Image 1 (tube, rainbow, N blue to C red):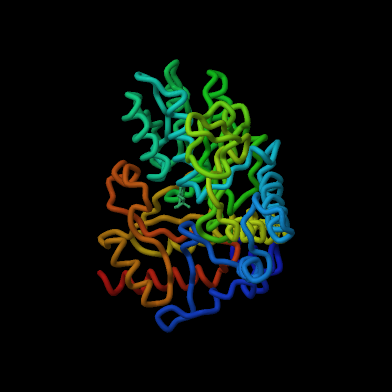
Image 2 (image 1 turned 90 degrees about the horizontal axis):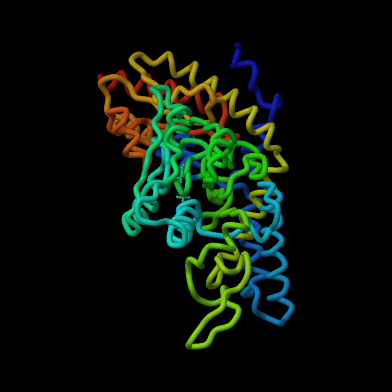
Length: 416
Ligand code: PMP
């Protein structure tokens, strides 16, 4: 395939124009025009998101769900409109199933703590995969330890694909929940969530999906996936930090105890007893990140304006281009070569520590991530200290990739 000619701006997306929406992309780093290839850690923000937050604080701010006065009611309307927008974005059946959280980390902790307290008993099991981010490992370890339950791990093959027969085999009479990532932040692997959910549901087991690395790159439909919980972070979908979403099936959320106690999540309080509010407020104690929600709404509008199918198509082509070009680097070893991948190229170069490579690229204005990417058990499985990870968004170009490849070649020549 001639990948170079396939992805000129104006084909799937007008990337040259899109880049103008992102003020940060025109700045320099270490005196060089920045090549930003760390969107898997956090993506950059379009002007519309920055402006929406600023405008909110300038003209619309008041606490939500409380005031009888107009300003508070308007803030509440704007806030709740984003809940509906998110519902539509992930095709959730009802907006009350959309809980605002700080991000994926909090979304998973909420389910681990609340679902775990209610449904986990001694001897029970929680099943995760070998490619999980620490935030989809540690909360389960914590609750399993508390409850005397155990954590099971479904293995992967050398390419970084889940071994489905093993996954199915590990779904036992004792499995109370499956928690799996939709897309691996280290390998780029897209997991077959729909099939995994089918296998789990066949045994009556609910499934939580970590959507941190999926939501920025593809259309997510929680009904099509049939997921019981799905969580994503605002800052990875071109929105602000500190805000994220947990979708949960009402059946489960209604059966789960609250996570945080405080204002907003109650129906009545006496010193003797408190009754709780219904969904979604039961899980949203205290003043929420209102500006974050407004910014997230603007980010969703922006992504939809560009078009999710166009984003996926463009990024697939750019990833193919990056993979082909990186093969020019002598001694390169890709970590994560799954057939079904999204937007991540993780690699090592023989004889060179990833950190040294990253540090030299930084001097050239190229931002990549080096290290274990919060997936230490996965790095242990591969027997490596970490990788260099270039992660893409729709604002990246073939020129970014060309500078990366030239940079890696130069760095390798210096370090060898
Ligand atoms: N899961 C995955 C797969 C991730 O990539 C990340 C972020 N690196 C997280 C969870 C945690 O997301 P956050 O830090 O936004 O809570």
